[in-house]
Image 1 (cartoon, rainbow, N blue to C red):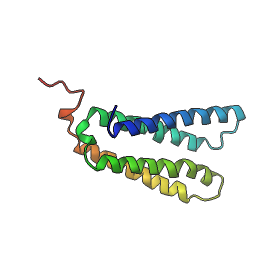
Image 2 (image 1 turned 120 degrees about the vertical axis):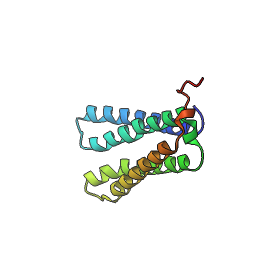
Image 3 (image 1 turned 135 degrees about the vertical axis):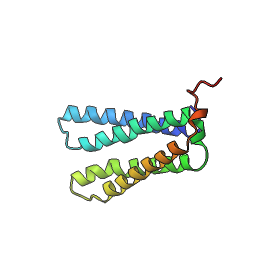
Image 4 (image 1 turned 90 degrees about the vertical axis):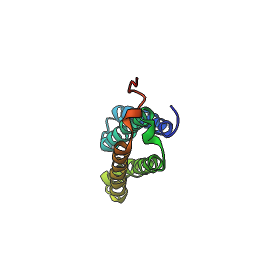
Length: 130
């Protein structure tokens, strides 16, 4: 896996490992207070980033240009704000990071939607051409 797909997959793997360790820690301590942040790390980090990676890998035309790099930046920003922001909101310190991270996550998904619409599935790796 090369190009923009690679950093998305690397982020996915790091988030999966972090989510697993966090889940084990919560289970061992019997303290599940921060499980919403753990869930967002797994869903936005592991699942969404893996889907992004596979899509960009399978539809190389969608991985071209500045849009995928902007999508990657919005995704990294959303994870960097939202995952620590949710615990801060739960612990009633501040909800500003969670709010900003939520908006960045929305932007990330909108950018992915544009990438999907602009992608050229007829040139996708999984389409058999005669």
